[in-house]
Image (cartoon, rainbow, N blue to C red; front, side, top):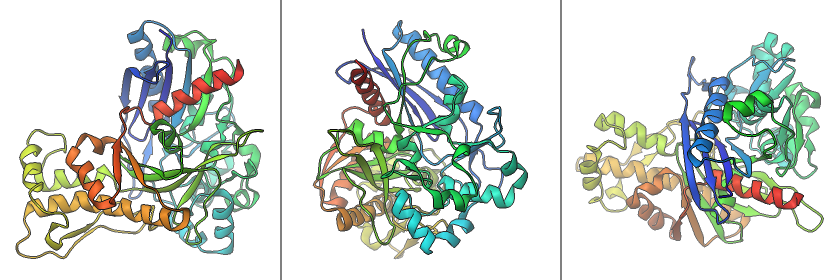
Length: 453
């Protein structure tokens, strides 16, 4: 059996998924790792743990299937930052998108002529999530680390260095850093000047179809694969989620709610918002016969992680606990609108549509007749209303969409998907394949092989 691996390096886990020629999942292995918060607003991971998770997942998947894959292609969560020295040794942990330590720097830059220029050219909203303000924060607060940094990498780039010994990034991941001009396919000078770095301190940017050279023999042995297997660098998880869902035409959107949430459409040109509420990330660069492909939308900090918080704080249970069944049954008896009770889900600050790291959550309209079931439903509705606010911005600046492909953990709760249909007022199609970004990566890897042959 010929199969293709999509290796998706996510925020809480790495998933290796095998797909056959028909894009049917034939095997999956997931490895989890913790997030560390040594100080308020800090969100970090040990990059070595992530590398071990990725290589372990590939090894187990290959063992399960009993043969090597035709290719391995990568997807990764955006906006992480790792400073490494001249030997590629990490000087910091992996600083995640959810890390808010650079909030004051982002706040000072946002809305200025320079900030507007950076948004217009890079497509990345000014926010502490992105590597741009994080690098500036290191420059101000960790000058010794900043001075000793040879390269600034994301987690995908760090993994590739461990496997191949070279510093590469794909142009899709680069386009989400706030440092890269996707239209020019080059690093954006004003961004680098603001951060205080040079292009030599960043990885070499290449097409998402780029096939890496031979893997280190020791790395290949650790995964039980031949050194000659093609590794395709791939793209970012948000862009690949659209590709994997098949939402590549006008009028189609993808709603993803996992730990965080996102609503995205696919276009052939950047869609700029004067109010800087949406992002524009590159999926495919232009070719001689095809225009560039962008994924435009907004991501929220407050997806299912908010539901996890609510269930633990109000019920003392995880959302997946068996005892939650009766609570959900009671919640489903509450009408849409929760009899006037509303919930703002911004307990982790917010990216789209507010782009305010200091945003907070709240319940509003509380009356004596509201029950625990009302609060329960209000949380789920609040998460969706926030996602619809992103959709409203997209329709305002990019045009209407008519169908939504839903994926992510929330699709495992059919009543939550039904709520989404009621709140958005649009047709919701649950993606039949749960591979998401991993499927998009495998599809990209397969296409890269076809382009070479």
